[in-house]
Length: 142
Image (cartoon, rainbow, N blue to C red; front, side):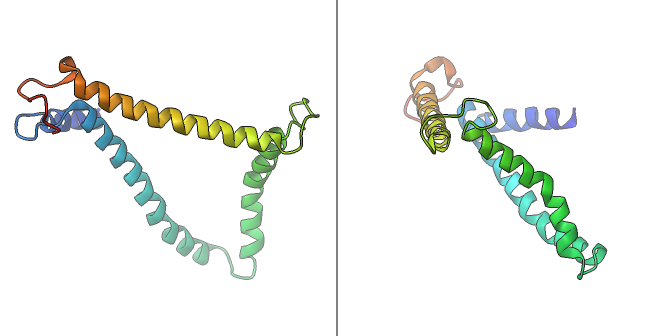
């Protein structure tokens, strides 16, 4: 609840007459901040985890213990690779490596769709006067 209230307050502040940010820009800023927060969380916890591993797991047994913790991740990766090549799904046959090509092709199509969505969002927001906040001119970016 508090995060929702804080988000609403920051949105009203960002779109106020003092800063003149458009809602699309606020959304992009929020996504960028979420990505940066996840990035910082990931890189700030790695030294803490390494420190705790050094304290809790004896050095002579550390490699074996960590290998057992990685086992479920490796099993999921192997199952995913088998599914890509049609062995698990039962389709079998076909050209060797076609699952990987399909996976990368699908990723490329999704990336292209995301790029087109962002470009169309900015174009649509720039040219549509109904999406602009009152008090901003046509050519203003912020």
